[in-house]
Length: 279
Image 1 (cartoon, rainbow, N blue to C red):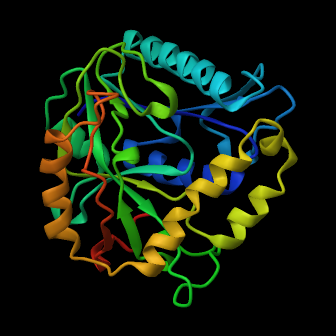
Image 2: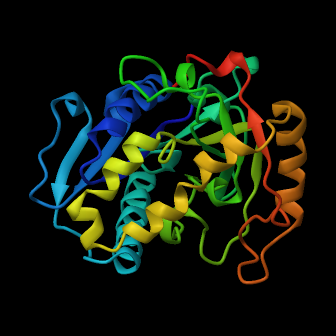
């Protein structure tokens, strides 16, 4: 079995981080394989991080663009250290992102990744979850996310080269590997839950720390996932995710040929019940 680490950086994000620690410790074989960096020495490491490698570091940047570049440079360096220190793979994701193996395979994430060859980096197909207004109530912490949310947009933005097998450099938000192409794995998904609840999104608008960094415009833009899953007809998951893997590998945006494209199509799918207790 491969030795696999997961790393992330957080700020004021314990809601997601609690779920992140629970999920990746289970899927990778223990909390000792999780590396968590709190962005700012004013941050307190949560008690549920006990057993992980969690620490606060000097705050990186004060504005969105500069902070993101600095954050990914920092995390790319940490990933390189982990690979040099004996890890076979390093998964780099935000605290609201979960790399998930299709349950039909009956494998943990570690088992799945141990059974395939990764050349440089590996991407999972991105799914951006929203809240279907009028059908799905406010999210609660006491139930799995996938018991409460059933619709997502197939999103090129979240088809990220999150998994490294070599010391490479992530671009901002883990969205690409500088100077390298990407490969989308079969039966592997990246579930993004950052904007899957209207109430939580509205609360984020009031977060002075984020607003001071210029996140207000970004958060309003990301509320599109809620609008899309509410307004668009949900399509068959297996059929359209299979199509999307092929399409995203072929079509590239002209401004970034090492990122996936999908011709601007907005496809919403309903998540099969087989996923409902995973996250």
